[in-house]
Image 1 (spheres, rainbow, N blue to C red):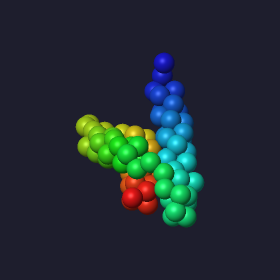
Image 2 (tube, rainbow, N blue to C red):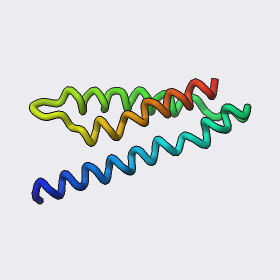
Image 3 (cartoon, rainbow, N blue to C red):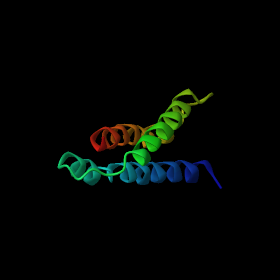
Image 4 (cartoon, rainbow, N blue to C red):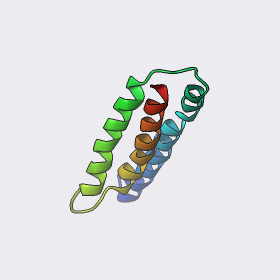
Length: 86
């Protein structure tokens, strides 16, 4: 397979990962309304995304931007869902 295929695959995976973490919005909304959801899964997701973001930014010789970008929303929405569930 050629480089262009892997580049496209990386960005498609990035879009689906962002969509997965944006799906925390209904849980966050319910948490804020008082219908508290589970807190452990979003916390673990945020920790996992922190590791992957770090990997993507520190990778040598070239940063892995799709990995870094895909995991940033996981940190933001994961921590938000965690905190609102407490």
